[in-house]
Image 1 (tube, one colour):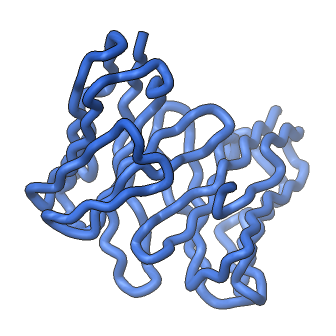
Image 2 (cartoon, each protein chain N blue to C red):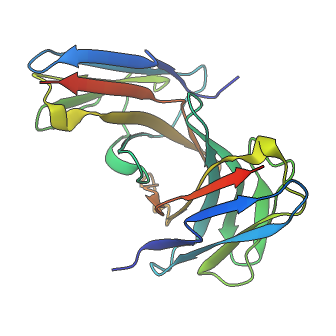
Length: 114
Length: 109
């Protein structure tokens, strides 16, 4: 049972570099999310997707882009990394059947921008 | 301002004590979830509450959804070191699943 898999698990970037974080889920879920987690701030929603080919902005979308070309994959891109984007990034997926909106999370990606 | 306000931010107690964590909002929700997160891991769902006034029990954990469906509480009876973790409440708003800032609970032997 793979569930939600994030790659990479760790990354160090220099300011101005770009990178893509990959999230893959094998549960055939429609909804996928990208969050960042910083000390004392819980999980803040960056972008989300309600289905293949659709994306929407969350609470903190600036500096990030996303794509959902395939149902099972949700990519998070940083075009020009900044130190303020140092964080732990979590991807999640859910099926949202009625009031059941349980989200399943990946193990996280720890990103440091120097 | 966050959609969901959690209090307290941090709670440190001795094994065997009781604790309560709160999740409040000015919005009404169709359901609310509680997750627990351990270091180096993603959050894991504990419970979903759906009906106003609902009380759900999960072993020593008791979850309550406010009558107006704007707030919720998590009560742990006789806490154990294994209850240590970050407790997060979450609500779905038109497909956006948003979380509170969390309550860090530390239970010492």
